Amino acid sequence: QVQLVESGGGLVQAGDSLRLSCKASWRSVSSEGVTWYRQAPGKERVFVAVIGHLGTTLYGDPVKVRFTISRDNAKNTVYMQMNNLKPEDTAIYYCSLNVYWGQGTQVTVTS
Image (cartoon, rainbow, N blue to C red; front, side):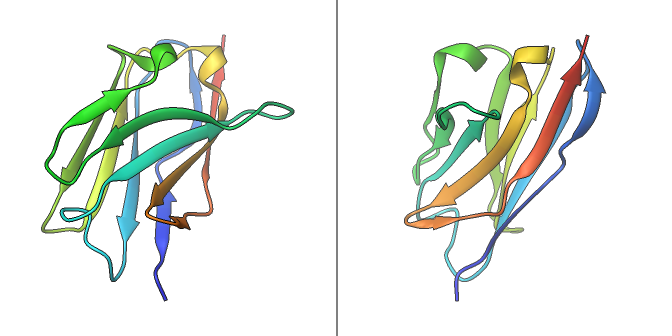
């Protein structure tokens, strides 16, 4: 059974930083791409960032410049560094690998 576990969310103030983690079991983050999405209450799920199996990255427009996705192959973990957080970043953040999804981690940013 493939498992993805997100962690690192929390309650922060605008301008603060967080680093989210997505740890995968069985499947390797170095051989398959991992994508971050987020969903705010009452809103559609939107694309945030992706890191491909070759290490290339792509970001959604709302988070460009402020967010950075990376991976640690030895730990089989993908990270998303989030800087200069804004209230509009408040959402549940999910990671996905192939057809598998994690349970999500809550990020709340106050003014």
